[in-house]
Amino acid sequence: MQTNHGELFANMLRARRELFIVHNKWDLPEALGMEYDQYDTPASRWVVVHDEFGRVLAGNRLTPTTAKCGIYSYMIRDAQRGLLETIPANLLYDEAPVSETVWESSRLFVAHDTPAAIRRQVHARLIQEIGAASRSLGASHCLTLLAATWPRWSKRVNVKMEAMGPVLTIDGIENQVVSMDFTSTLH
Image (cartoon, rainbow, N blue to C red):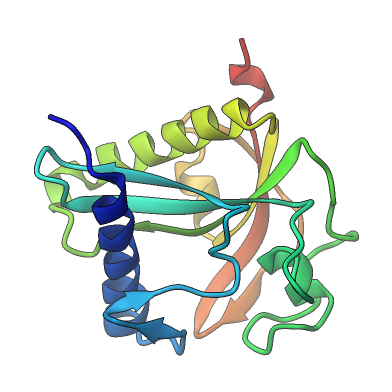
């Protein structure tokens, strides 16, 4: 089966809207039934796990930490710089990195209607594909803002992760910036 990447991309943005705006009730930009923001630029790359019918099961956006688009760079760095109202500026212990070997992983999700029987497999596949995509882009690490429950599942997906900032409550959920280290899987 051949994949229509344009349709898959739009379906991924629709799935993001369904999860983040409809299900989680986050106040995010949306248009035409899709969720997207200032970080969905040509500099970014997207990883999508889908079934044989093109139904999106999970997804993620990868953005180089060297990206610039107007006043914006990447979400975690812009939050630290005080450009985002919804994410606290004290989310990192140190200054946000700008490096060709570090990319940001954002809008990581497993679709809320992904069957419970395969959710763990889909999540593990997504992390595996993020690692493969990151490595193909020259990155050894990805920064990501995750639910603070990440230590419970990081070993299960076989990726070394390290806290890069304090646990912060955002929209009633405890979150933390984490570095995913893909160097051990480099070949």
